[in-house]
Length: 485
Ligand code: AMP
Ligand code: SF4
Image 1 (tube, rainbow, N blue to C red):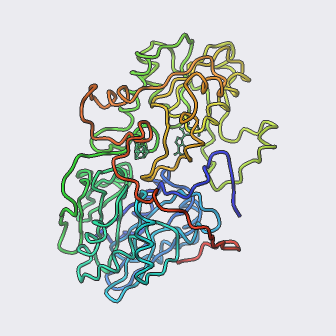
Image 2: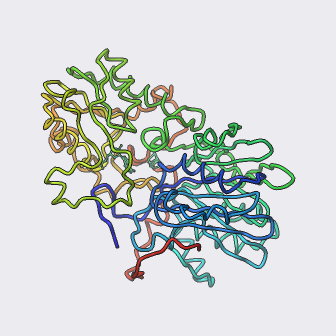
Image 3: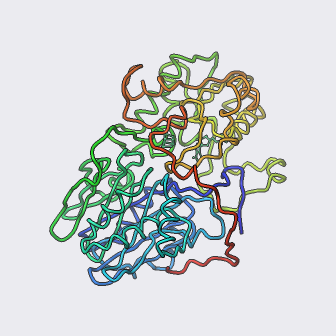
C-alpha cells in the first residue's frame, strides 16, 4: 500500500542514518541504541547486521527501531562487530526490499552495506553493471555500491571498497561490514556527515555525534571527506581513496536535518541555528509581541531570534512526538475537518498577540500555510514569518529528500507571492551570505559548504540527469513482512 501524505514528496531518495562498531561483545545492542539516537534521520525502515568473524547475521524491517526489533531479534544478532541503518524513503511497497543493510555473499566474503546519501551517477553505473552481467534486486544506490565492491574482486575488502568509492560520485557516508572487519567511507566533498569515536577498545562510526554520546563513546573526530577507515583486530587504519579537495558539507544538515546536540564538522548544530536566529532578528526585524519556533527543528533559531530582538520566547505550538511517518495519516477530507495530529497552537499564549513565527525552511509551503492558519484560528492578531535559511529553489541530489523543482514554492514564486500563499502578514528569508555568517564567514569568503538548493550551484556534475527515465516499472504486490533478509 502506498501511503501518500502532504508531508512526503513523491520521489525515491534516501535520507538516512548509519552506524558501525567493531570490537565490542555487545555490538548489536549498542548499534540499536546508536540508531535510536539517529532515528530522526529515517523512520521508515531499520536494520542491523553483525558478524562473529565467521558468520554474518542480519535483521531489517519496516518502521521505527522499536517496531523492527520488538520480538527479541537483537539476541540473534551475535558478534563483536555490527553496522546499522535507519532509512527514510518514499518508495511504498518495495520499502522492505530496499531496507538496509544490504547483505550479500561473494566467493571471498559476506558483506553488509549501509549508505546515507544519494549518488549522482548511480543510474549510469547501474546501466554499465547490467551490461556487464550484474542483476539488481533493489532500486537503491546502495546496491550499486555493493556490486562495485563485489566486482572489484580484491582479496582485501578495504581495497575493494576504495575501488568502488573511486567510481561513485555524489553524497555518501557508507559503512561496510566484512567477515571480520568494518570499513567506512565518506564522499570526497564531505556532503554527508560522519564521525569517528571510541568506546573502550571498540571503535565506532556514525552519521552524527549524538549517536556517540548516546552509547557513551568518546568523540575522536569527523571522518575526513575522501577518507577510508578500516577497523579490524589489528586496530584502526586510515587511508584516502580520493585526493584532498575543497569541502562542500551540506548546510541543510545544520539548518534542518541534524540533531541540535550533534557537532557536524566542528560546528554544534544548536549553536549554528541560534546564531542564524540572531542574524534573522538583526536583519529582518518584525513588529511582534512574542516569538514562537516551529518545533522541533526551529526551536534553537527561535531562541536566537528572541534573544537578539528582546521579544519573549513562547511555546505557542505543541508537537505530538509520537507520530512516525508510517503512522496512518488523516486524509485531506479528515484534515479539513480539523484533525490536528502533529501540531496544535496554545490559545492562551497566542490569543491577541502579534506573533513572530520562526521556521527553518519553506520547501513546498504547505506546512507554513497550515501553521499560519492554526495560529490565526487560535486568536493571533498578526503572524510574521521569519525563515532561518534562504529560499529553497532547487532539489537536492545528494541525499536530502525534498521535492521536485516544480513543487518547491520558492523556485517559481517571489517572496511576496510566497507570503501571500502562506497567508502571513510579512515574510523574510536569510540570504546565502547571512547563512554563511552563521558559521562565521564573511561575504566573498570561500566556504566549505554546499548551498546548491539555495543557489542552483551544484558542486558536482549531475551525470544521471542526462539519462532518460526508463518507461517500465516492476510493481511488487502484497504486504511486506518484517522477516530477516
Ligand atoms: P513544506 O510544507 O514543504 O514547506 O515543509 C517545510 C517544513 O518541513 C519546515 O518546517 C521544515 O522544518 C520541514 N522540512 C524541511 N526539509 C524537510 C525534509 N527534507 N523532509 C521533511 N521535512 C522537512
Ligand atoms: Fe544539502 Fe542543499 Fe547541498 Fe543537498 S543541495 S547537500 S540539501 S546544501
